[in-house]
Each structure stands twice: as structure tokens, then as C-alpha cells.
Image (tube, rainbow, N blue to C red; front, top):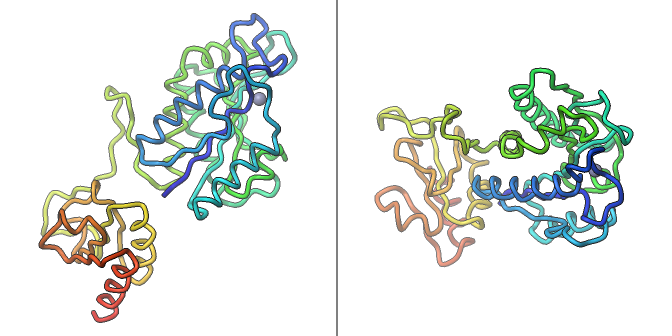
Length: 296
Ligand SMILES: [Zn+2]
């Protein structure tokens, strides 16, 4: 399981935080983006948890509470690889002005993983905004101890997509949310090392070719195939013992991906003929596969 925790930043009853011409409120942008990113993340196989699933008609939620919810949920799922992503848009003064740009925050206690995530996502969002508006401004990755990211026990970043107190940024925040969500998920995919699948078929990204054309040239020496989330953990453990090894889920696996195929869990029923191990439960399966690997 790979876990994305989204934090919508503000609720409807937040005071202020709206464009000078009252055409957009920050909580409304954040919330819409939260749902867009959630849908894309799930399409990419990520598990998604929302600290505030329905901010409509609600008071602001405390910042510590957001971090606490994220930490408890992550712990309840046995601490999977995760990212905490807090969604915001920015303001400078309360009249329209020149300040604009995209910036991503990490806390002063940020791990390298947090910094990597911030860089990937900042670059991806900025590049997208720049393609919409050549005058877009890259404010870069910054350090600030916002409570939500400082208290999160997992890699955590806070995104300020743009300024709703700047007319050009505001236009993007209002009219290009699909593109902003795509840019975000692209950076998130990079962080989780999973393949990004663009929604817009007119501008396809060249996909990483997991399906080699011929079976004579296997891509990897070893390939472990699993079918369920529980088996994924086992597959990862097993891969430590195997050189040049790729771990894939059954729906991604294609013949020719590996020379030696290790199939665990229910996946073996669909892949008869390759090596497969199927114990009465996943621990028995793990045992069988370890014995097999040690014996080779
Ligand atoms: Zn905010």
C-alpha cells in the first residue's frame, strides 16, 4: 500500500481568505483540488485519506488535529510509504497586486523524502503553470514550520499553488484546476516511483515501457508478481534477497519482464506455468518462497 494523505487546508467558515473581487475563496479552491487529486491518485493505485473529507459548512479544523489525524491513520495502516500533502492558495494584502507565483513548503525537521517530494511537485506544478502563462513565477521550495507539516510523522509538504490576490494567478486558480491537479499527481507519482498516466490523451507522456517486445530479452533477472496489498509487502521483503529484481502487481505483469518469475498469493492461479507459490496463507507462502530462493 502506498498512502497519500490530503489536507484541504481550510473549511468553509474560514474568515477572509478570498480574492479581492470576491470571485474565489481559498477553501473552495483547496477543497475542489483535494477531490480532483484524490480521484487521480486512486486511478494511479494510491490509497487516499482525507483529513477533512467534507469542509462544507464547517468551522476551521485545528492545525494540530489535521496532523494528528494523518499520523493516527498512517499508524493504523502499519506505517506504509506515505506522503502528507496540504493544499493551499496564497494571498498578499487584500487588494490585487503584483505578488504572484508557486511555492512549496517543507518544515525545518523535513526528511530528505519530504524535500524530494517538494522538489518534484513544485517543478511539475510550476512547469504546467508556465506553459499556461509564460510570466508565471517559480518561488521554489521554502522552509517554514507550519504546524501541519512540522507535526506530521510522514514526509509532508504544503503547497501554495498561486496567489488569489494576483489577477493572473487567480485566473489560473479558477480556470485551470484540471491541469493543476494533473501536474500535482505527476509530481506525486515521481515521489512514489510509480508510472504517471496522463488523463489528457491529446498530450500523452511517453510511458515507461514495462512490456518488452520480445521474450528472448528479459528486462530483469528476477521478477516477483503479487496480487493483493498484503502480498506486496511479502514481495518487497523477498526482493531484498534477489539481485536485479522487479516487484510488480499482477495487472502490470507481462511475460518477458523477468527471467525468473516468482508468483505469490492468488496471482499464481492466473499465471500457471510460471513458478508459483501458494500457501494456505501469505506467511506459509513467504516461507515456501524463501526456501526456494535459498535453495537456488
Ligand atoms: Zn491557506
